[in-house]
Image (cartoon, rainbow, N blue to C red; front, side, top):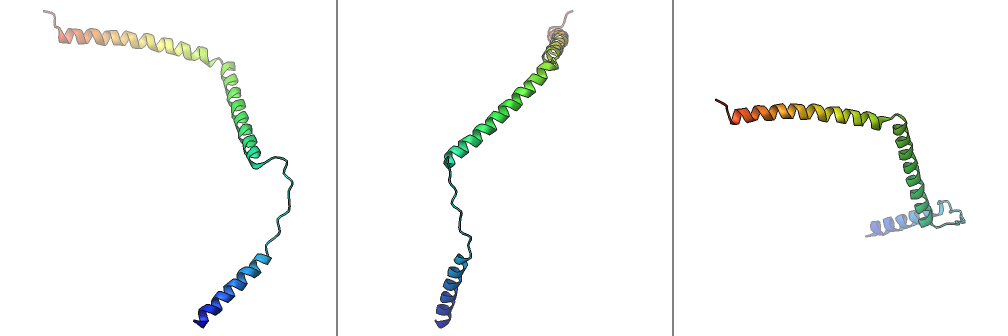
Length: 99
């Protein structure tokens, strides 16, 4: 029992002396609260992402990719509709053979 009492006293003294080595916090005068700082940070990230996205959209419009995509879409739909018509005719003649 004496050993546990000695160990408890030593740990207590160690904890008390360790606390004295801590650096005291400097008082910082905050004009804005932490909630305001968080909301300002979130707003700045949001504004940055919106500006980046706007820049990308402007670059895409500058490259005239919309017109290129429309042209590719029209060509693809023309080709697909042609081949779909051919396959449809073949399926019709397979299901309803002519004599």
